[in-house]
Length: 219
Image 1 (cartoon, rainbow, N blue to C red):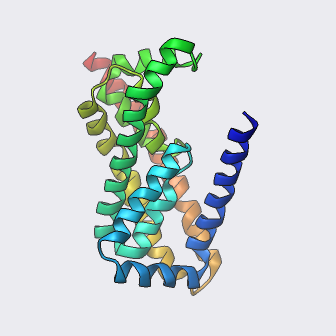
Image 2: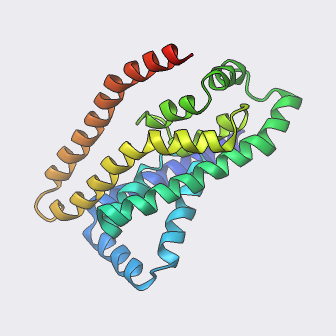
């Protein structure tokens, strides 16, 4: 247990350091840009692998979307970021479905999971959409709990794409513009980051009641 907590703390510290350097270290950004330009195939694969690792340890993957915006711009960056999200979410879904689910049934590792899984089962793909639209959740790690449910992979993936796409666009766009205002002033980056976060939370709070009302009517 102590080792697991220590590993999680180390990964969190690494995540913070990497995220800080991606946003504020122009030398680090330039190094990444040169690497991505010289490795057209391996660089996107490395991006996907990084998100899988973060998702495995239930760490926020927003840094990957920001990095995609910095390295490839908005259009291509969204494609790579969404692909990384799909791969990482699929990985955690498979782990939850074929490993944790059997483990959970034998030793009841998650005492809280039954009610959450029942809620997911009742809403199917709509639960995936709502969960992945929440900017506060580590979205790529949600596959763990959805893997424990009866929701099929296709429905999980469909809800994931619909729910996460608006956030992907916001965060990748933030990464793209942060790379251009960083040389002016760090304050602009901080203001832009706060604006993106506030807008994402605001849109989620405004849209989710409408979505939930639709779901209730549909049921």
